[in-house]
Length: 355
Ligand code: GLA
Image (cartoon, rainbow, N blue to C red; front, top):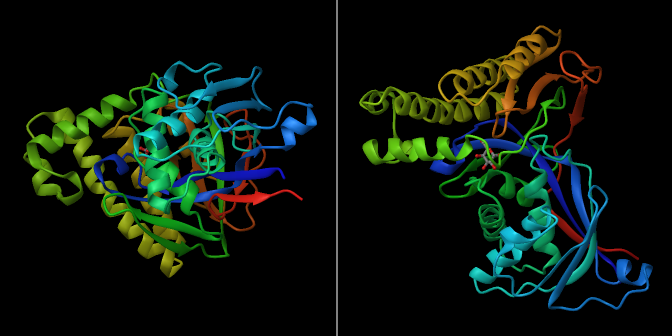
């Protein structure tokens, strides 16, 4: 019987570039997911042999070509077409942990815009982990999928995207402590809506993301874990660039705490204020925004019923996230070619059978 592995994308409401220093983030899984239909269905449909447990064969709605590789896989970064590297990375990461990925024949489709900053790659990794038959707790699945991203690309990402895709809770954002991996769902008030606007398509592969990770590591060499640091400690960092990066991380962690309090209290005004402050910190101290994104934040901030706007995710392009009153409609283009997409907080990844 065909099986379906489904994993959602995510949008981060606040707390960017904090996860890889064990800081705080506040994302939500969204009602747009990547799906792998596997075993039986595709093979039967095209009259091929049933799946072989030591082989992976995968096609996609969005890309030409067939991804095929044998298990165990040694060099996931060499798999072609290149989207298959994320899948192969998951198999390799499972093998590193002594798990046995089971091969499958499958087909991938996605509702998550690819390269749009909504974690299409994490959704693919998590769906692949389920298709490989991973049997582990939430944080282990997320850790395996994060490692897959490291093996497949040159992006030394944190755990936010993968953990959100696994642990999502319908109608809730997730306060995640990326050091302990504790996840605290926070109910989103019904009176508010979350919109995402793609400002420019981009991939983090080849971006300055790794240099930001390295700069945070350099700060930690001088002052210890940034998750434990405060403003006074940051002020002792001698290099001005490293000091700015650290200042972003330390102030962003505090904004996440304050945002969680504001959301719980239904204080949309305060939540919005914190989102703007987060954007300016990412733009000035962390330098992960672009002129277009800054202009977009400015333009959307003027729309009636908007409480807060900020860039979201890794940056250097990608999406902005907008917190609005429930009745605001941002679907028409305002500043970029794309209109907004309203997203709703969704449950995390799941595996099911198709009758
Ligand atoms: C990307 C990474 C995440 C996180 C964000 C920035 O989405 O995959 O781990 O670092 O950027 O918050």
